[in-house]
Length: 147
Figure (tube, helix red, strand yellow):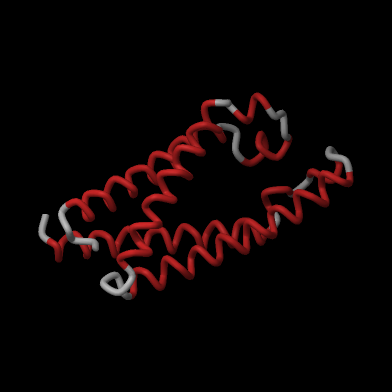
């Protein structure tokens, strides 16, 4: 793979990540993730979950902005892109760890059943994609496409 082809592919990956994080932020800001739990959970849990979802929405929106900026100027942001690769490895392994715990069976949360009946599978796939991204970034670093 040439340096130019690598950068074109990296730009597409970052654009996909941008779109995914916009979707993620919108999904969480909408409140669908915790819709209907008020009848099942204690008030303290509902309050905490709404705060947590709001924070996650904000972080997702921040990440979408970062990915948008990175894909616009890959040459200037190579060091940050390499750091995103390392964070992706960490987060991907964390998602795999949680997925292997079968969270939807360990934590019988009503909203996981209602919206994501196979949440562990989703976490495993997300972790896999993040680890693939890390490997792609390391490939570019080893080939000296990224500095």
